[in-house]
Length: 113
Image 1 (spheres, rainbow, N blue to C red):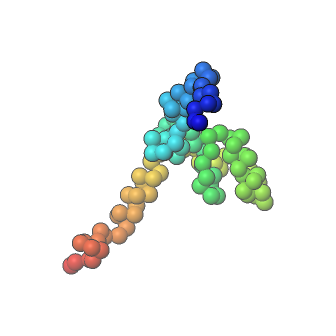
Image 2 (image 1 turned 45 degrees about the vertical axis):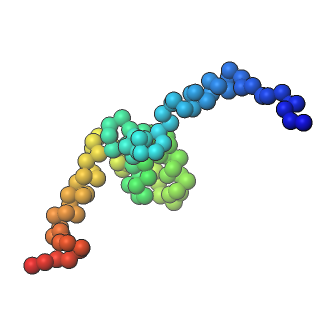
Image 3 (image 1 turned 60 degrees about the horizontal axis):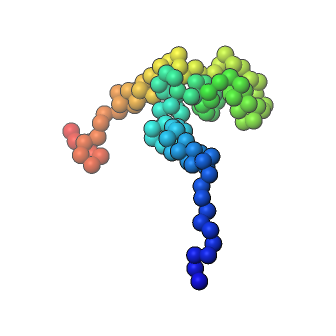
C-alpha cells in the first residue's frame, strides 16, 4: 500500500530562504558581467593586476592575489590599475586601435582592390 508515510512540510525558514535565493541578484550570468568586470563605475572589480590583468574589488584582495600568484615579485600598490578612475575606456580604446591599424576585410574575409 502506498501513501502511508506522512508528507514532509516545508518550514517557514526554508521557504524564506528559497524566496530570498530566487529574488536576490547574486551577480551571475550576463546581468552581472559588467559589474564583475568593473567597466562601469560602481562595479565590484576596482583594481587590476598589471602583471596578469586579474581584477579585485579592493587593495587587500589584490595583495592576497599578488602573494599567491606572484610571490617572487614585491607588492607595489601604486602600480595597480584603478579601473574606476579610467572609467572603463581601456577596452574601447583597445578596440579602436585594432580597427585603425588594419583595413577591414571584404565579403568572407577577402580584400578586394
